[in-house]
Length: 186
Image (cartoon, rainbow, N blue to C red; front, side, top):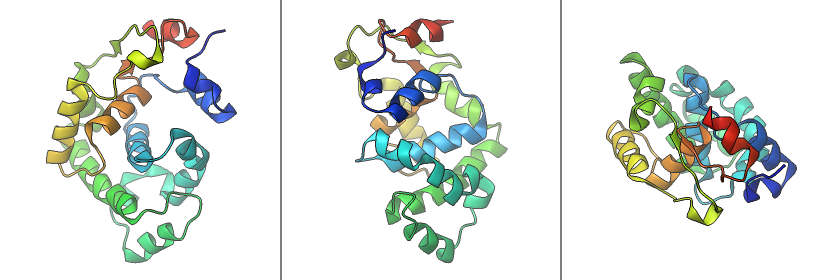
């Protein structure tokens, strides 16, 4: 069974590729989780984040935005001392800022509806033959980035937004020879 080349780097990446990457997500909590994780990945490899994902879930109260939005300095310090996550002060503080911004969007119609508007509510089906053809950003990810920044989000540049779009199934970027490409077309 053919798979995207990046999925073969480790067992955790293969499992993530086979079971999650590119699956359309419409659950606000999970959409928020991926937004925080993609921001945490900035400058690092996705495998690093995958290996710390359970630690993130535990440290960030299951990505409950209501809880994260009220984290205080003591909680920030706990997070910065936690080896199960990326201990970067800017990224930790961004998670709190992003939780507050996320909750505002949720209250005005829902995050799912807001975030999926950038692809008109349906997955963009790409047909890449080689991984090298996959862009690092698109006009949609640039629009998403600009909108998120205007709403106060941090660590949401166009490249992070495109990786987010891939993760939550807003784009199908499995190469055409990958078994998941055809599965996600339907």
